[in-house]
Length: 299
Image 1 (cartoon, rainbow, N blue to C red):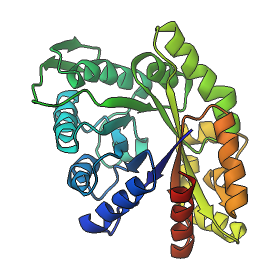
Image 2: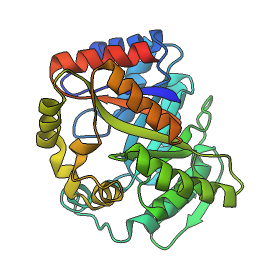
Image 3: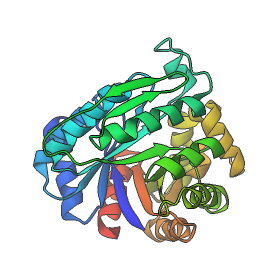
């Protein structure tokens, strides 16, 4: 199982983010991950941070598909590929109604069907192939030529059966949120593997994004997570995966405890079929520092 590290970019300068990426590279982390939120544009940030490192992979998890046409996203991703020396993993996903509909005023009708069309159109564009795609709701015609750009690895944030089917058939794998090892082993891994096998593709990656705090006070940290991320439990796709795992909310999926306890939980994820454990450090500043240090040592 590989080890990835999410870098919280909020409030940080490019030098601070670059230093964090360099430390991850020096300590054997496989990939550093950034989120597409309401601050830095994640792909632009990756292009800016890449010169601070030489070998580590960069990933965004995830770029919401509704605000960006496949041609626009492919052009940006391929440009970042050149600027990073072809070290990009591009994660895409549907996002959530409160953002797509509430903030952007766009329809999120039948998101799984739309995302499938999007991935079908995006794949050839990332490979530099000519595309003449006409779907029910999406059209993409053209070809991108960016010298030196290789097709980036494409993954799809997928938690439900239809999204997992698309991920298995058309991408290199999936990223998960709020999914414990029991959900990965009992649902996500067999669902995505079945789709990939039927499509004649290799076994997909399952990248588990997990809130982690190496702490001596897990109860207090769990309450902190409830305050910070509890609302995610009301989002439909997250609610469904939480219910599959019998969890009341996001805080109940966190990995919390001392170094020994956290290491045991990582083994559970590995045994469940996780291919990459993505550390998302949470808690107080001291807990985040301790967690990052543990992740760097563990890698």
